[in-house]
Amino acid sequence: MSSNNTLNNTLNDTNTDYVPPKVWQPVEGNGGKFANTNKPTAGARHQQTLPKGDNPLQLYSLNTPNGIKVNILLEELAELGIESAKYDAYKIDIMENDQFGSDFVEINPNSKIPALIDYSDANNPVKLFESGAILMYLAEKFNKFKPQNTQTQKYATYLSWVMWQMGSAPYLGGGFGHFFSYAPYPMQYPIDRFTMETKRQLDLLDKHLAHHEYMIGDGEDNYSVADMLIWPWYGRLALDESYERAGEFLQVDSYTHLQRWAKQISTRPAVQRAVNLELKPIK
Image (cartoon, helix red, strand yellow):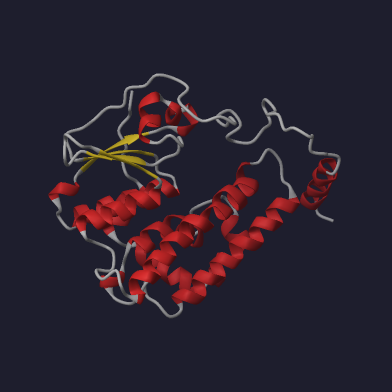
């Protein structure tokens, strides 16, 4: 037995002694990368004044997969030269608890990035949170990167893959990614559980992309918000740009059609800018 397997079995044996109490209480310093930011309550924890630039759109975010989604669409709109889609982007450092500041919570009561305010109508600004909601709002507003006719199978396919991403990615990020990379120690059961689901999702995408250039069809006109939502999570995972050692562990090279799609999107100038978007400090 390898030393890694011995370590895993020892730690897993320790976990078998745990019995959930009748009423759960938070444990201080329970370990893991985000232990110092997580609490079982919502709402602002400190006063905060967020900066505001001169452009119509104000983005408050971080270059995580969910943040990169919005970056991609904004940069693709910039690539088209749409003046009314210009934006200012500010960094919300989730390790410094910026997401719990009063101004950010005013935009997003759920205290997660990204969040956006549309000041196109200065008297009636529009506040948005949740990456899927932001992308769908902007796609509708500018009538880009979405099927034009809402009463078609293509539009239904578009909506379906958009919602698939929003429902499926937590199994990848909060499930596999957390227990593989961020948990305080290796635990076989959750890693096996979420690896199984992650690989099923990768296989699903690979089979779908065997018959589609983009998520909703072939040709540049079918590059859509669905691709922009899915690529930062699954495309970057396929390119082994997500979690250390995850590419080999998941055998991402075996998903050849997913690889083709991931590489194709990664060459887009807007996507390259989005991944490395420079975010202004808020302080």
